[in-house]
Length: 166
Image (tube, rainbow, N blue to C red; front, side, top):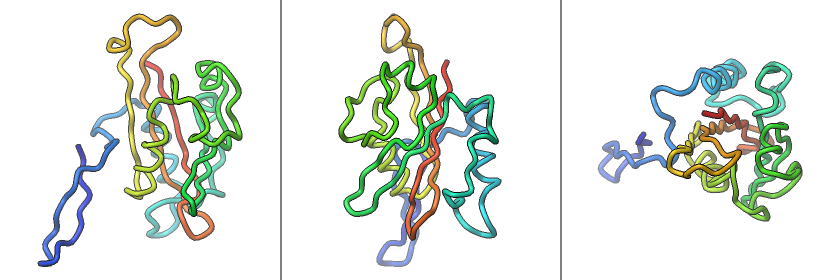
């Protein structure tokens, strides 16, 4: 698990585990999404601005992408865009829904905690579901999900997400 550094009262760096840490090696398609996200950063900024993202820049991955709006006070998450493959696996249209008002089901298990972790860590997060651990549920395969924060309106205003099926 990755660790995020913080200063202790003595001025030494202390590391805490970061939930949903991105492994050193990820699927090439998720790596492409992350590289695209990094290419949008301006100057020395930690992350790109949300209005710089153009999903059309990743046309072959479009159906596996999502954009999640981040509201600051209270902190909530709304699905702004959801690719057709994600909708098909979820079983109904979910674009425009707040995550806390949705049933957390395949393939969006643990999406709300991952969104919170992405905002709090100010960095990329990762979740993977191993299909072998689920049993042989029809139509359900394993997947990996990457979430990336984007700046807007004075705070992290949106998350770029991608899913890769295994």
